[in-house]
Image (cartoon, rainbow, N blue to C red; front, side, top):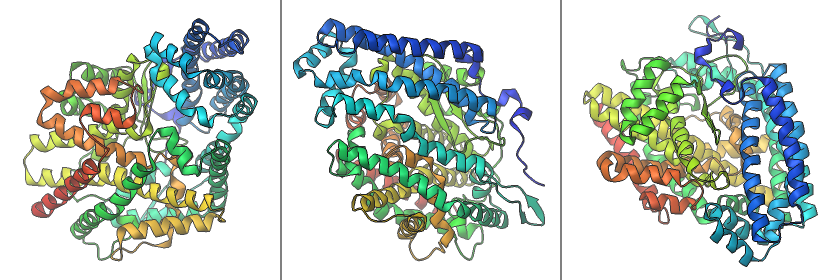
Amino acid sequence: MTNAMPKRQDIDVQLTWNTDLIFPTQEDFKLALADYKSSVETFEKTYKGQLTDLETIVAALKHYETLAILRGKLFNYAFLPLEVDKFNTELASLANEFQLVAAIVAPLLSFLETELALLDQALLEAVIADQPQWTSYIQEIIRFKPHQLHPLQEELLASFAPTFDQPYLNYGTTKFEDMTFENFEANGQTYGNSYVLFENDYEISHDTELRRKSAASFYSTLKKYKNTTAATYLSHIKNEQIEAKLRGFQSTIDYLLFQQNVSRDLFNRQIDVIMKELAPHMRRYVKLVAKAHNLETITHADLKISLPSDYNQRITPEDSKQFLIDCLGVLGEDYVKMIERSFDERWTDFAQNEGKATGGFCATLYDGPSYILLSWTGLMNEVLVLAHELGHAGHFQLAKKQSILNYEPSLYFIEAPSTANEVLTCNTLLKQNQDPGFQAYLISELISRTYFHNMVTHLLEAAFQREVYTRLDKDEYLNGDILCQIKLDVIKEFWGEDFEIGEDAGLIWMRQPHYYLGLYPYTYSAGLTIGTAMAKQLEENPEAVVERWLETLSLGASMSAQDLAKYAGVDVSTDQPLKETIAYVGSLVDKLEELV
């Protein structure tokens, strides 16, 4: 059989991440976990009911910082190994030990922000004046005051945190532990199938029979779990709806956007403008690619392929190191050193193995590495994913200049540094090699990976989310079939009448874990809007822009997402950056039409 997935224990250790950098042994982790539980209990006894003066508040917040840093280490050590080996019962047991402690300490810690929110604003402003590193954190507490519940209610909600997290965990259990994909036949060969193989390889394969038959195999399995996955997702969004009502928000969307400090107008604009104005460019692009592949019809299984090219060669993880250093070196010596450290210290898990989570992510420890998850194919598509995740790593390594309480900016800005790296990488390569064949190949990869993934795939998820939440708040009935129909309608609206979008496309909503993280999907297009503008500025005038961009990244959450973008030189208060980004994609398609 072709492409059977290896077991985790059979993977070369050099292709795996080194979580021993967090704790050298499991015993060290367990000792730290016990210390964390004890420290939280001491924290509650010391400060609960005592936050009445500046000195005590400052002492409490400094203590809270140390607890937050330790919790980050414990959480990542407990769950990162499980992300790459989900069938390992020893690792699952270790994660469970963390969850049991987290369930105990969550209500013990809930008093802090609740009591701070009940204080006079003058005292909170005195904290800001005395400890300016917490400005954004305190301002968020002030902003949240109107939606604060009674302290006992807040404590009760915190006690239920493990239950509220359960739908996301159930989704992962269904996806990685229960789903078994049958082998399929293509071109006279038998292939194994899985989430990793399909999403990282088959779905973008230039072999039409392999791509389409793998899709039929993949979605036939998803269909069997449609109703279970729908019930899981609906329980999650109903939890969000209940909390939104409790806190006095008019809608669940308003509640989720309030958490991001983003207006409804910005959210709607991102979806509506892209659905209307980017769609014609993407339709043109996919038709161009389909013609190059001699496709008579274009199905939803064909949408993510790039142009056929002799340049589409695979490279090793080690070769990608210098490749990305050359492309991102404009960001400065310290940034290059960060990339080198990520390879030298094994921050990245490149392996493809059974039981590993799909996609890619970057998890940064406030006092440690940035762990990157990939499933390495060696294609340019995957190189751009690594550039993307290194963008997150560089961002959060720089943001450590802030207090951990002022560390993570709004989701609206989170994807800007990562997508900027993707565009910067491609723009650098386009400058270096003027060969028409290479130019066509790379432009196609840039569109099919960076812009398709962030401004089509995730944007269509955002349009799906908006419709689901709107119906939820109207108390309409939802189930698996209705969710599939909503997704299918959104996809068909974007692609129009010239594409054969089959019923299986409606199951695509089942593939995305971001639905369990609030209104996350639309922020990819928001980030890429900022990232495209920044990549252009970095390319055209690096001497004047690099320092300002790196300083912006070091500001963490000390500004709103809109203010961070403006500080970097991109004004998202208007639709101009978004329209310029869409025009840039159009210009890339124009150039492709000239080249091919």
